[in-house]
Image (cartoon, rainbow, N blue to C red):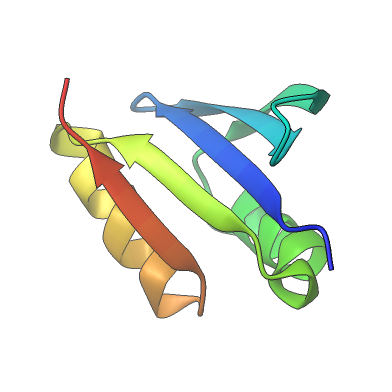
Length: 80
């Protein structure tokens, strides 16, 4: 199984998402709102794909890390 890697650039109102393969090929880049509806959509798309998610630790990033972990995802935090 090819695992998906997801990088998140978290801001207060928006999150920029980059989906990649392990060989660093970018599959998709897009933006979602930082709201419950968008998080529900994100969960529906990715939970069954077992992605590895990483994001930078920041004030918003800490909140998102907890949210993503609580949804059942594997999360990795990066320090700037």
